[in-house]
Figure 1 (cartoon, rainbow, N blue to C red):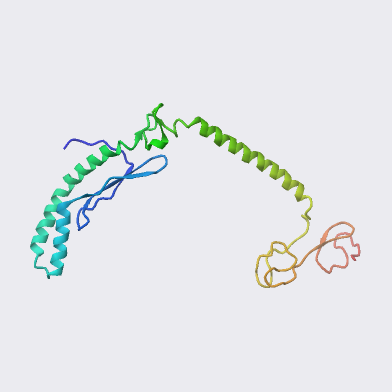
Figure 2 (cartoon, one colour):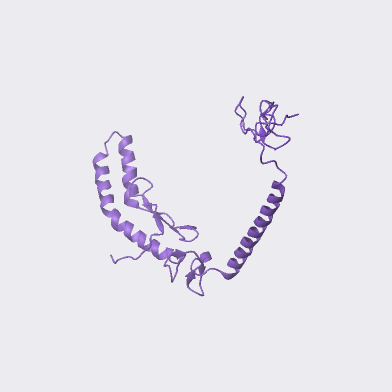
Length: 215
């Protein structure tokens, strides 16, 4: 048999023995991974061996010797039959895939620029790249506007206020709420000194920083 040239963008689904013995190969696009699969081609010797083995098990091994002989014959002929089936599959697969002239990957028709002889990874579609760049610019601009809006909203929050983020009673997340959303437990909320704005624990009568009486 003559030598075969083939890529690695395939999966061998063949079985050498059993009632489902046969040849089948699956090829895939190396860009988008779309699949194309050959029609199942039965391996008659392997199937006959499989049926005979089933019969031998049903009739208490009476067909055991014949089954062994047929299995050996099927095994002996498997490799040459598989090579021939694979050769035919490769030839059929080439009709469904194109080889890029730059990266040499095999890609489907959707991923191939026939006029340039290149896949779209090596020669991207101009209109697609324009649309992609426009979308990226739109997202970036919107993100910058959202960031600025967030900064303006941020000044409304008291960043100095300490908050309990987990309820000490039921361990539920509070997200800074004054009361636990799960059990209603009152969270500890610090207060700012009326004079120097130092954050103080609840119930503090005099500021620990400036001594000013609170409340």
